[in-house]
Image (cartoon, rainbow, N blue to C red; front, side, top):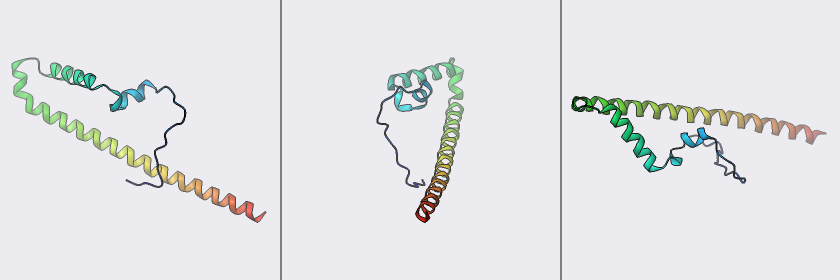
Length: 105
């Protein structure tokens, strides 16, 4: 994980979070709500006794999806970190250039 001086900043003014932010933040979803979602998913997938014969493939499918999502999130995070570091270097370079110009005046 590249740091580039990246620090999490806590906003000083509280503001209402968007519904999308609430839904994408796992910490914002109550444990009971997550249990209900898992229960609904399993009820959908396991409706008859024959569905239990396919339980191993269902578990493998869920694990594959979990790995793919984890990889996607990891790629997004590292992409954002690289972009942040590049923009930070650009801004620092411009500030340094501006300081150099003002010192020569």
